[in-house]
Length: 399
Image (cartoon, rainbow, N blue to C red; front, side, top):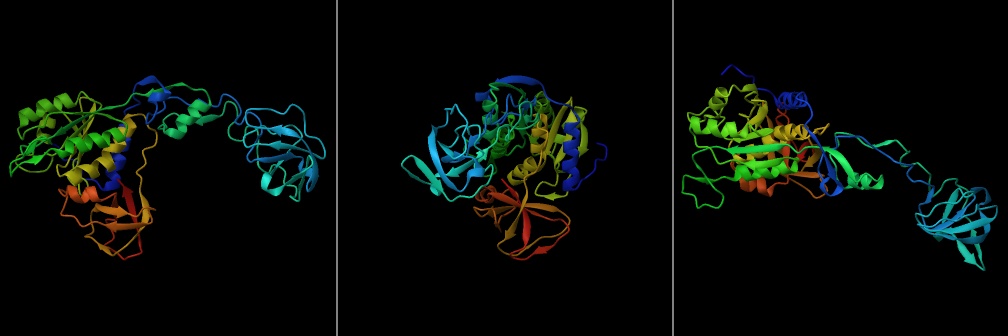
């Protein structure tokens, strides 16, 4: 194999994003609102009218002319959400109004019920003039024809509500990418099997499938590949029919790590075959027969981390998503932390419920699934810094 670069974390992630984004957008299909959660829009969606369509009250109270405040007012009626008051509010008049009801012509302020007194058909308030108070003006949320959702945005419950609001009951979305998952190694047995002392259950395939679904993909778990080149090559060929192939294990420099050899036989192009991170240093990224692939290290925590920081970006881009940001934010360490410089480290940690504090979790290395299960985040240690004290800020990446 030709010499391929070992890249820093940032270089490797930038490489993934650039290569996959440059491959073009996926096919488009039309879906209903019941299918829209988690899908990526393939079209811009615009408001079909002004929102709100008329000025509306933001509180229960009285609609008045601000120029008449403070003072006493004749109550001329009431209006509630779903109704309308047919005539303007004149000088010295007040209209009892409910939250969400249209503010009638003439009125330009709503006085909250708590700031009023009512007796014998009149309302009195000492509230001063404040034009526009508790009034949601017509078109203040969106104007007719204004874009409210952009192509390339991943839909969630709020954007689905927006689609329903503007009457868009069917929408164009990018097809979900198919993800083939191939775990390798003679030591693997199925999760439901009773392993011998020298065997392990295949946890990587199911964890990758779960991560792929969360990123918008449709996973297919292939049979585990033995440490034999011809059998591995046949399974790789099958996996390359998908939109993305995730390979777990077999990418290190050991005698029986045959994945890269088999990929070479399939005329694969390798963009990098190592990254300056821990866990996950021997990660491989490339393309064969038009399909991008990742060779992820076989230790489970390495597989989890490298999917999160590399493969997820590729999968989101293959699904049409225009922005593929890595969710990392600063949190305060609850105790001191040290590491050897040179590698960006993503280590199991626990974020407090408010996200303000970060506690490293003791682990026994990248095979320690128990530590990963106890964690709800990974701390991100700068490769150029050796130590942090309690109370200092450190980046955290939620699981």
